[in-house]
Image (cartoon, rainbow, N blue to C red; front, side, top):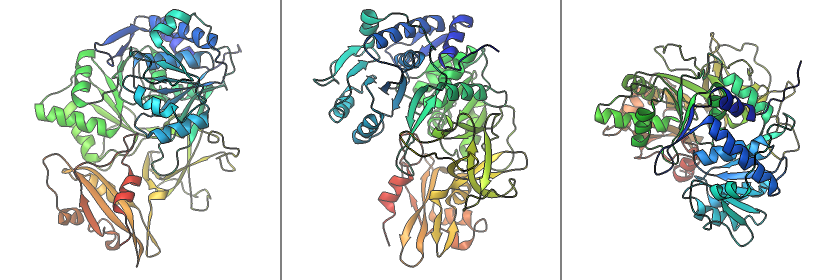
Amino acid sequence: MQPYALTVDKFLDHAAKWHGSAQVICAGRPQIRRTPYAQFRERAARLSGGLLDRGLRLGDRIGTLAWNTEDHLTLSYAAMGVGLVCHTLNPRQSVAHLAAIVNEAADRWIAVGAGLQPMLRDILALCPKVEAVLVLDDEPPGQASGQTQQCWGIKDFIERFGRPAPWGEFDEESPAGLCYTSGTVGDPRGVLYTHRSNYLHTLRALQADAVALTADDTLLIAVPLFHANGWGLPFVAPAVGARMVLPGRSVEPAHLRELIEQEGVTVAAGVPTVWLGLVDLLESQDAYLPSLRRIIVGGSHCPETLLNRIEGRLGVRVQTSWGMTELSPLGTITPRQAKAGNGPRASGRPPMGLDLKLVDADGVTLPSQRGVVGRLRVKGPSVAERYFNDASSALDSEGYLDTGDLGLIDAAGNLTIAGRVKDLIKSGGEWINPKEMEDIIGRLPAVALVAVIARADQKWGERPVLIVEPQRNQTLSEHSILDALRGKVPDWWLPEQVIFIEHMPLAATGKIDKRKLRESLAAPQ
């Protein structure tokens, strides 16, 4: 057979050659910009040549502190096409956090998006080895760089230094991207994706029972690129020639509604909080989005009430999913044609190319893999083997990665995440699973978001505290919350306190930030 390196530049090559008039649509500028794939690919290749001519070499890392814009995606393909590594940086993290991972990654250059130059200036003060800054999104350069960094605007850089450079002339095992875990349950750790792992992940996502895009689709990527390469969707769309819509910095409900209506979006992807805001807006205006057919939800657990509201208001199929940064990130997903049952929804089955197994607390594989809760481990060609800069492997003796999740697999192979191992509460020597209570309370129509955390207790060691963000214009009582739990969980699980808050703290990934809740509410009693 012919040698054919599985490198991610081939996705854009395919789109440019066979779907050249299909567009990348970016709303991050004063006016929406629509660029055909053929033109997008040409500009990215010219940027590649300029990056090489300024001294960057195979394996060098470029940090990207930016939103979902055309320039950010252009730089990503330009860098990866010639063997450079894109290290996506989350602007919602602190300066100290970002500076630490820039230094750990040894980023040589950093690209910065609209409105983020002041933040980058503070980061660079702590990162003396960064050599150059590339300013994206038509912002004038100069606000970010210090005395030691060269600085260009991307448009001027391409005009001055751009030249077409050949893509894909390196081994498929070469690194393509670097992304750090969110750190909501521990210290962030880097995951280094290879071209091969990203390529195979894309093929897995495109399976008919997974993301299943076609050239007839218009995909809205409301997932930031700094969330595991935007869930890999910027590879998936050009691989089939689907139109790709990038919202820029804003995922505000009115902005997303306008984009979906104007561009005829058929498939959209994002975390639950994004769709909560959009459904609130549409319900308040008695509005609909007729072009939209599917929404892919991931990143954190989506309450059943919200899933029902989305499908009822929009008339779409919601595909729930589960994944991790370490998985590139897709783990499981519900098929687009699957029908919702009467109970809580699972996170679907793993597409071909990923295996799951359940183990006990000692790491021993459970004799039965169906209908029991165990500690979830995963294996596949798009699963991390070790964390960035770690000397030792993260895998067990059979080559599986410990996810830190508790899982239950039903008879049909559907995975339900039953909680995080680190979230378990040990009270009086017995374990309490917060996820079970969160699922029950999350199904109440008046509940928007819910979290159960441990608070230190002198008698029992730990006791659960339940925190609720009510739906807009809804009122709840502690009595009604506890009544919803009685008879469904053991009485000794019932929370010591129910706290109502206006806004649930969210981490930079859109997940509920339990670390922050613990810091603010879990003081010893």
